[in-house]
Length: 179
Ligand SMILES: CC(C)(COP(=O)(O)OP(=O)(O)OC[C@H]1O[C@@H](n2cnc3c(N)ncnc32)[C@H](O)[C@@H]1OP(=O)(O)O)[C@@H](O)C(=O)NCCC(=O)NCCS
Image (tube, rainbow, N blue to C red; front, top):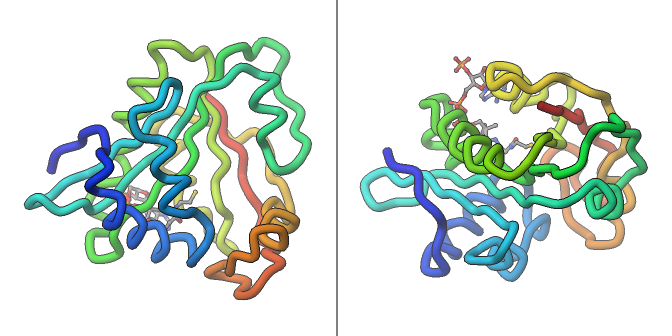
């Protein structure tokens, strides 16, 4: 398996994985393309046998930008200045539990740490399970807080279906991890 920066020719494969992971309409091809070759944006893909099997997206922002972009008000520690925000992680379901997400997370955190003092990840709590929880804890993140109904208004505005809740509103909670 290799991890590399995504290019635009991979967007269709990325969208299939994103739709299967997050439900249709959560993220568009257009939105995914904004992570490619843009300053402060990261999109890494995992490749096996020339096929994209997973991706991770991230961006860097200062504290004010971060607080403007999150979907719910969040209290953050005072000492944060430059943040690396890990946005989406998704793997092809045929390739789950082979360490792909772990490798993607390791690659993006290594890159972000070059310029960021804090890493930030909002992780989807699917019912009782937060799939990214162990992975984040193993990669030295700590749980900062749980935010109920994190996507509630966003799902109504953008009209995306949630894997767990079905049609909007999405009532899932998010867990906020920091490193
Ligand atoms: C969550 C996801 C990215 C994990 O990808 P993966 O490549 O299978 O993960 P890894 O093989 O690197 O797993 C490493 C560890 O993460 C944890 N983990 C992985 N999938 C998990 C799940 N579904 N539930 C709970 N823990 C999970 C385990 O601790 C695992 O270690 P282990 O296999 O030794 O127990 C993948 O299941 C996925 O794409 N899910 C749908 C999208 C999603 O939920 N993304 C996260 C939203 S923030």
